[in-house]
Amino acid sequence: MNIKKVAIIGTQGVPANYGGFESLVENIIGDNCPADVRYTVFCSSSDMYSRQPSYKGAALKYVPLHANGIHSIPYDMLSMCRVMRGFDVILVLGVSGCLFLPVLRMFTSAKIIVNIDGLEHKRDKWGNAARWILRNSEAMAVRYADIIVADNKGIQDYVRQTYDRPSELIAYGGDHVHRHLPAEKTEAILERYRLKKRRYAITVCRIEPENNSHIILEAYSRINAPLVFIGNWNHSEWSRSLRSKYSVYSNLHLLDAIYDLDILYALRSSAGVYLHGHSAGGTNPSLVEAMHFGMPIIAYDVVYNRETTENKAYYFRSADDLVSLVGRTDLKGGDMKEIAQRRYTWRHISRQYSDLY
Image (tube, rainbow, N blue to C red; front, side, top):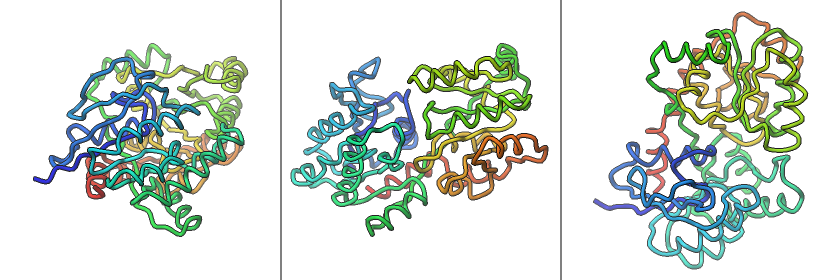
């Protein structure tokens, strides 16, 4: 058997407890990993609570820098310095450190695959200097990688139109959200939060302007319907001001991030509708996960969300749009589950990556 040695860089690390790329790595290693692939995952020793030597059959190597925000640039570059030898494939998740890619290209014969994520340089949270770095890092990624991965057709079209280069379309899985939770435990969790099954909406996201949290909160402040909004409310002055403004409404349950998977599962699987406000990026993991629950989905109206849901969800652009949609009684979610089971399972995603190797 010809074993492919694959290094993964660009994430905080595993076990996953941060974002979409971490969930990707968590689910393509382990049971979903083909027998002819051996993964080494580079992790942040500054961000990970434990420093295990291996996890789910993958070797773990540690880099002594933070992995997120502006720190991701030197973190990814230092990781690249450590994968120049000993690997057949280098899978780079995100473009943060890709200004260094021409140097890496000079010192390795490994196949370089870059998942360029969701056009990071267009996100509102970055200043001009960071945007310049990220925009040029993206250009270096497209120029020097052997294969570009786009997680959404909208991103794939952008790469073709901007750089005249093809890319491979690989999204994210979401079937890991399923759990076997006794009905009585689910009921107890709902009772704790004073919620009734299928009688509330839910959204889970980082509280940032591009995720349109303010539009969702404004809409629900005007209607008498419960909303569970889970996010990092202490992340910034903007997120704290939103929480302060809207916490006075009794129908709004503004919850901090939940890491207990049983509680998170009970709240998501029992909701009547999922709200998705992300406007930047490609295929968003939280949207794909929600689709597996088969509930109606109301998503912000951008090409990425329409591509992910095959134009079969419901879409909003303003608080008025959202108020009108929430008032409807004919919302259905069966199409979402069918699409999720057809396109967004981790066994399928893992096989797509291993085919590239």
